[in-house]
Length: 110
Image (tube, rainbow, N blue to C red):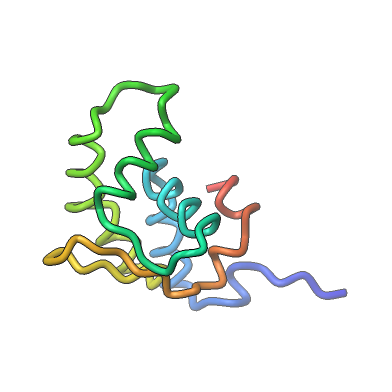
């Protein structure tokens, strides 16, 4: 049985963008939200609330700080990697059904 790797499924530049997008804990929390959600879209407020709740152990950032990070850095970076779509005007993220969202192992490692 052949085991597929991230490099075998995607171009090297795409792998770099994906891993860069997964480097921040907030971004991985956003992907976990979509992995575990039946909905195909979420508002910035919903995602910020999820991230802040999921990462309560750190307690270092307020909900507003999480929302600012997601809006200006996290969600655009995830969108650039092709994993989600993000409309900064409406502050809405949409699931693109990227195969990465099915890989809990990759999200745990990143």
